[in-house]
Image (cartoon, rainbow, N blue to C red; front, side, top):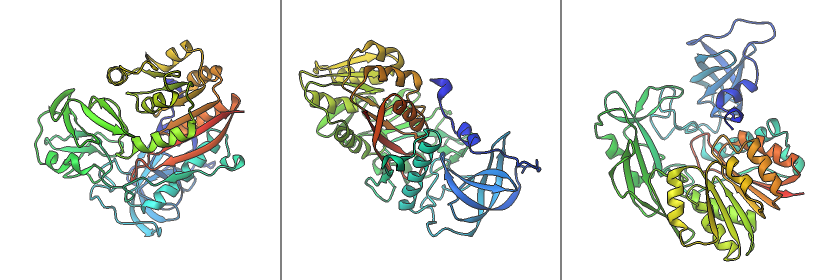
Amino acid sequence: MENESLDQESREQHLGPVLDQAGQKGLEVGDRVTVDILAAAHGGHFIARHEGQVLFVRHAIPGERVVVEVSSVASKVTRADVVEVLEPSTHRVPAPCDFARPDGCGGCDFQHIEISHQRELKAAIITEQFERLGKIKLADLGLTCEVRAVEPENGLHWRTRMDFAISDFGKIGFYKNRSKEVQEIDDCLIAVDEMNVASLASRTWNGDARIEVATSSSGETNVSRGGRSLSGPTQLHEVVEGMTYTISPATFWQAHKSAPSTLVDHVMQMMDVRPGDTVCDLYGGAGLFSGALAQAVGSKGRVHLIESDRRALADAAHIFKNNSNVQIHAGMVEQQLPKIDKADLVLLDPPRTGAGEVVVLSLLKLRPTTIVYVSCDPASLARDAKWITEGGYTMDSIVAFDLFPMTQHIETVVRFNLA
């Protein structure tokens, strides 16, 4: 639900007040101070304190002493960028991209951090979010959050979907952090090579409509703008675990080239689907998971795919037109789920805002034996996990995958079993 979403500012405000108890004068934009970096925070920032003020710092690493420059001050949140590293972490490395710097591209948060340490920080963030927002201590459940590496393990050349902003000079780029100013680029090191970003960067584009590029696992690349295809096929063919999904370039699809097969394989292990089962695939999109689930439940089982996006629904209708065991429900999950009266297993893969209390309470009424939750945001996942465990389920597995390397984003899969 809209009012339940955990946006970045609300997360930051939850971490502490800007002023100390003595009411000292706060920092102002442009001030430079020396601080020690204490910990990583969800959202690509790192925590520091200066005379009682909490600062959210970019381009830092826990354990470092740095000079920061204040970039913005709000009622409860002060942000800053590292401008000088006085005592560097042993995990600090030169950023491979020239644009990964303060006042540069706002896309990659962690290029200055050695890749294996990025995963360690992400695991710590997930653990902290569960404890603080979900009131769930993973250690008390005998669980440890692992963030698994995914090929390519160097964290570069993995992204198959890109939206490029256009600068005032007609060049592609990305917005700077918390800004509408475009950082022009000549290449993007996290994009797959097949996207040929350098070629797009060499062109001059009229107008300010964004350039949208999608590359499929079959090697196809579509370039679109404003909903109109400029080049490449208007249908992409994604091959996952032996099944071909024909989708629109505009339909949501996992951005990391290894994500579809990685997630399908792990989810199917977690769900332990049996022939004849009834499974709900909530926020099912074009049916990435429904394809594998339909094969597993067989002709006597049923998969309920619920989705609201019209393009994804159109693709799913085409993909599953010959699958009598897949029933597609068009609409919001909170509206469609109460119409289903039976589910042995439930899979959730919601957007960043999470499922929310209404959806969680609705699925709890079905009393499925297993709930598997795929999340791209540990804060909303932790919040929803609290409601699920309070509803009589035990959390027995948590695994994260580094499907957004060089950035602060994390993909986590959690399993809950009926107690």
